[in-house]
Length: 107
Image 1 (tube, rainbow, N blue to C red):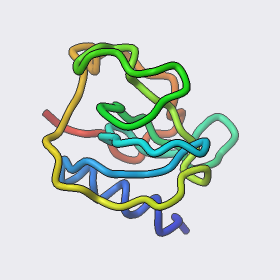
Image 2: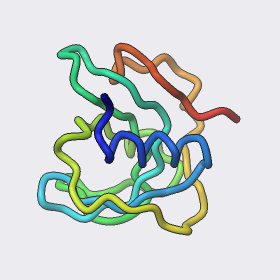
Image 3: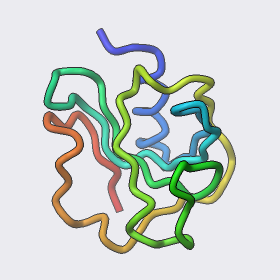
């Protein structure tokens, strides 16, 4: 049975909504693109980070280096926000973050 956080992120993908969350102690603003299970069978998601904090810093909007592969269990304080949807032009490339894809954003 999926976690409540998984279900919130899944719905955000369906609605093409952004979320706020804390990951590794840092506040992040993310657009979820893909959700499912990682190699270890744990809930996993691929996000595009468009704002907030990052240990390495963020590149300008649209830059492909802002992709984040995150185990859902490591996210806290996850809520939807009303920010504009963000992505990068390389989204169509094959991702390896989510091994078993449940849902992926449609364009």
